[in-house]
Amino acid sequence: MTISSSLNAGVAGLAANASRLATIADNIANSSTYGYKRAEADFSSLVIEGGQGTYSAGGVRVTTQRLIDQPGALATSNNATDLAVRGRGFLPVTTESSLLNSSGDFPLYLATTGSFRTDEDGFLRTSSGVTLMGWPADPDGTIPTYPRDTGDGLEPVQINVNQFTSEPTTRIALGVNLPATETEFGATGDALELSVEYFDNLGTSQSINIEFTPTIPGAAGSSNEWTMVLTDSASGGTVVGEYIVTFDETRGSGGTIASVTQDPTTPIGGAFVDATGDFQITVAGGTIDLNIGALGAGTGLTQLSDSFAPTSISKDGSPVGNLISVEVDANGFVRANFDIGITRTIYQIPLIDLPNPNGLIAEDNQIYRTSNDSGTFFLWDAADGPTGDIVGYALEESATDVAGELTQLIQTQRAYSSNAKVIQTVDEMLQETTNIKR
Image (tube, rainbow, N blue to C red):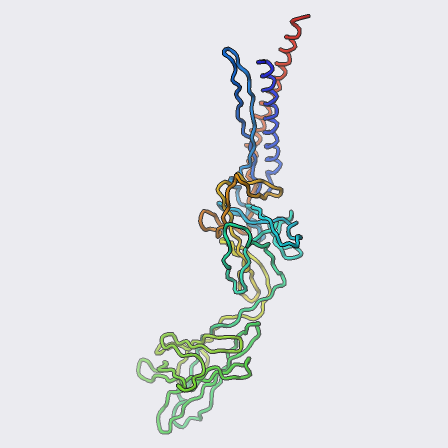
């Protein structure tokens, strides 16, 4: 029995070292595979209790696992959507085959890196079909509230490369100097006109036409008063605001706004805020906040000298623009850049964290799926909680240390040869036993 147990132990040793050799071969073969996590074979002894004075060899048992929690170094690239997780966490991905499934069910897998590029349908996926997933943003760029303990809210990230966008104007700051001489007795009283462009909800250029009419006093002196009437071109020239602006003429404050009033019976436009210089008008597409300067500030509208000149006009909004690039920032926000200079958030990529990453089940193409051993997962905002951040223009290199694997290869070869020698020796001893009786 003791001799046969030695034979069994030697066979177990051969099998265990063969498994270890397989992990080493896999690690070396994937030494240049981005995102690869090295496999490891661990040995544990088997003990068989024998009687007093005897010993039976139990042999060895091998267990293998993939060290998913060991990161590889990051390598830079020239593709904005080459993504790698720096620190703890996984990118949510799905398979290419799920995109062809009309049910809209996208199984959740995990990855630490990927070279994602748009395919013919605009989906961000790798050359092997691994497709990036994220939470879609609302049209205004905000991310709705999604459940964090399930992947039900995640969708494959799809980029419309022919996408157009525009932003409506919501705020205008107006700076204009009005000629003080036009409010003096004997002036012509002609209205001065100014047209200010804005963009409507469809990105079309519209204009707010502003007419400044001076109040001419009936006797000598100056009124320092103007009637400001605003009309909207998109509404067919409808009056959207009417205000009476009076300027200060005292020393130290001359030329600044002293008061802004409206017709108390039928005011047109929103109320003027003295402290900020804001009022609101309603054009065809919605409301616009317009700023002409606070009382006494000397910014916005002024009344100095004898020249009529816009000093500054600033506004938000933009015309229609073309998508030129897509980038993912450290917090996982997918931002579309347009040729008109605006950037819009279209997705957010969360990072998945779980208690035991090494308990994940490895699949092809360096992706993983959850198991009972990995524990329950949670979707974090990148760089929040225990997770790291997302690095664009980067890929995670293989976690294989080739020098270390070659060293283990030598050790494994020696161990395998030694176990083979044990089997050879046991065979010779059994042959001697059978030769006792001839």
